[in-house]
Image (cartoon, rainbow over all chains, first blue to last red; front, side, top):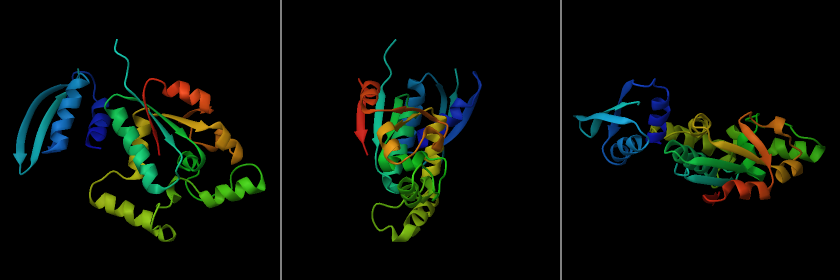
Length: 61
Length: 159
């Protein structure tokens, strides 16, 4: 479901816009950047925020 | 150009938990780029009715009675331990508490991700329903042969 929510959000971006998504380590952090890349989005950055939370910046092509 | 992956789901159950499985799989597959088709038949039709509660819809006394008893998407019973409709309410509350998508969220996500909804012609006939009784996102009314043609080349699940 994490990628479903992420995908709905990414679809609303204009081409060239980027967004930051907070992801929990594990399945969401593995899956969202990988699937977004497969779908042509660009993962600009992934940084550890706190505990098991990571911030991933994704750009729409 | 590579052909799109395809998932076709036959949604026959009207149980709350099984309908959640239908829309979880549908929205998840659509999000990762699958073409997703759902063929709603018999009790599965309850989740795509325009009316979401208990309402006398359909043509004919028996059909209207049946549709009233069956209800719509917001009155689906849990497959076990339904407790007169209390359990789905409790379950939805537990899902929200755990930050898990509820049935309505999964249903809305499936629509937003352009999952294709189809209604079974034969089941509609038996239950006295017409396409107007369903949400506008229902793309078409199909029979078995058309659904098999549609699902050809992909994976098919029966829920």
